Length: 358
Figure 1 (tube, one colour):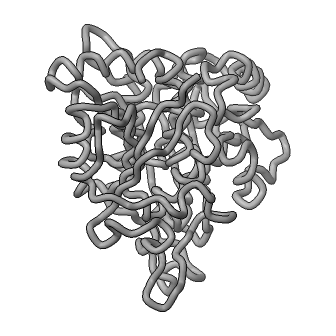
Figure 2: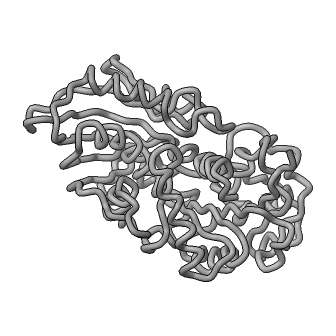
Figure 3: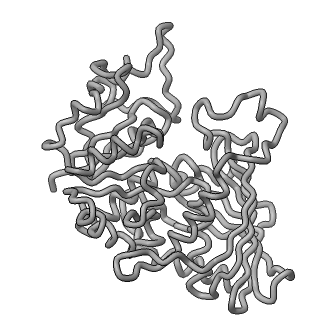
């Protein structure tokens, strides 16, 4: 089959580089155009990420893929949309609104930014969790008179929480959730956390993070009805912290359920989901969507971040919670730079392609 022609916008940044790596040798998508700021425009990719002293700012593990090295970085306005089928946006949220609006007038846009997340006609999508909300993309196109649409991923902290809550909500009902996150420094971006600030330290507050988690989780777990998403009726309290871990978010979660649940039932539920989740068989999907551990020392970031190439969500320390009539407490690990970012966006593109949306 002919591959879909894709562009990466924001290709020189940390998330853009994750896209470059995630799309290497992809069976369905081919990167044919790349774009970044005017500072990088008209340079080949390798020169665009090289500073005056010759240092190459490649922040992703492994070698720079050969296919990208000699590609010319374009100005965003110079992208030829007539020669594209899809755009991946890795642009910071401040700039993303205008850029994604312009691109969506002609093309589907999958975004890692928050620019459109909270719009009524925009679903926040996690492939395998709320696939039915993709139908809202057609409403969005009609509302905005676009040929394309914008489909954003959630905040990377929301990703693991929503993924682990969905099976519990569907089978046992989730009424209240309390979560404390221990978030990796890479979640703050390349220059977001100072070395002196995080070394030998925990930062107990991340601006706007807790509000994002509450709003996004309820929206993702909500139901599509009459062209709108009705948020899930769950009370969510969270405390988001930054810890001296490079990659991967760990979260401590307490869930009050409507029905009786215990660790064994939870294990069976997650194992069943592994065989039924919609993304099974897609190119970027992990062998196991969920990894369930009975070892009380798991999950740990250093041990979990390579599982499923960062696309598996790991669950451990699952116990009955005596604070509630019915409920559980557990720990989860989710890779903020893989499932929570570019590779998760590629998996979303695969799911949408399979549905005929791309």
